[in-house]
Image 1 (cartoon, helix red, strand yellow):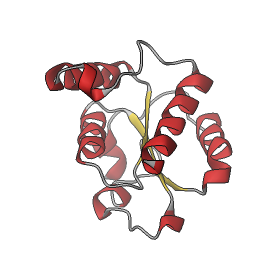
Image 2 (spheres, one colour):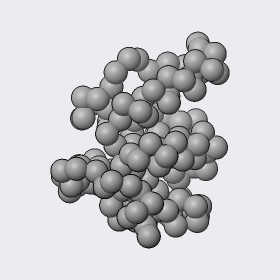
Image 3 (cartoon, one colour):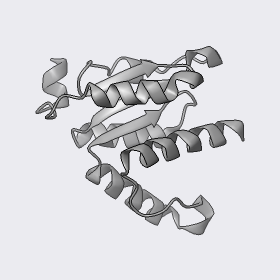
Length: 134
């Protein structure tokens, strides 16, 4: 339960600070699985940047990150190493320093970490994720 509340705070914080929340937060039991999937994919398509908290392994988050890569979105993955967990090599290995970034952080520095990421964003996205990793 603590992880869920912690992750919810990250989402709310990012949405609140960037004024990018469109629609409303919902509980999974309120909507069907297809509707949840389709809404999340639409949000990915509309997003300029995808911020994913990846400390707790999640098939859903991994799927969304894969879709974001396919959509050529900028991606910031946030990982808390102090939990003792090990980040998946598929996430850490995808980092290219431009389009796909992984940031290790501690909870007390989360706001600063996110703020610094957005302050350093280049003005235009890289043409292709795969070109930047070649």
